[in-house]
Length: 527
Image (cartoon, rainbow, N blue to C red):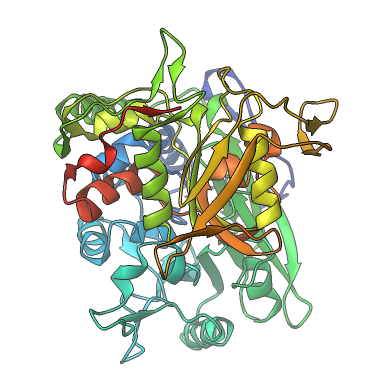
């Protein structure tokens, strides 16, 4: 069939799920894609319907994921990613590239998930440290319509340091796996050349790199430093990129696209037999069709929340936010706040653990602790990050956090690795701008004094040094998103996008405390 015109238009979605878009011919290729779903599983019901709709237009439909599908919500966390895999199998995914969060549950569970997938896992830069051979298939060549297309998969090398790093070394600390940081671009070019030598018409990279500037490899740099790629479908940065053209090392333009995150959009790439390409993003909220089989499966998954296993036991009530009486953690330190901050500090390998009081929404009573109790106490699905701050920045942020005590304050800090004396008789001298954002401390005495930081080597508390450098492990809401009026948003990012907070606390309870909340957390509140 001859194409009279290939319209370059943006996809519009209208009521009833009817798509107004460019004409799709029966010899066109349609590649649907998503990235960074992070447990927002209702989107799979939409994707299943979209896939069926595209198949009614052309038989040449392929569905791919660009990673981070197995972590981020209650259902994926309690199943360690299995529910997401079950849903993806029902939808009918063809290929997936691993995201860094697919490694959160350890290597054994990673293989359990990928073995359960009907889709083929493509990732060239997750390798055996000794043999240098990829653990998974690096690429696949597939005939779609009249074209042979090479799909190459990759994951961000930062994975080695940000997600379950203990999984990547043996008992003596020797590397078991490598993510090819430093040699990534050379290796990518090697696989591009290899698939080109096999006679493909186009090369599509399925990537979990992200386009943000960093000390690690990015999608734009991967394009700049290679040649032979036609299309780069990307994840990791959570950026919405409907269509961007990036020059390669020969000045040729490569199409780059990403859907954002949390199933805000479904991506669609259309390729004609003349190799003309167009991407567009379909907003999930505006796509009105849902696959009933997927909806039923997701509802069945949700019913499992009422049957969650015990992950730890506590002889003591763990005091969090009391919704009825507005007491506990919003004006003083509590044992649940301490447990959470300890988990952040210890599991995040930081000097200080920090959670704002408003991030804790329930108490956990003595007895068995299930994942549901964690979800009730920490319902926001925040990601853990680590940032570096000067001692002065920490002193100022702490002063802001205690500025309203003994009144309730959602910014009140629950901390670990940090102690101080609080005098609520001193009038707060914090400074804010017209929007209420924290901008500094005025003259006069401070409420928080005698501030000390735990020395990780000596396990002794030492006076904080204003010009010293300290790492804080906390939630992205505080460190990256301006939460608590920006009290801790000017740090140097060390580790981004680690585990979800409840997942990290679960790991702390299971592995560090061996499932027992002991007398260290006996005290109810400390005023």
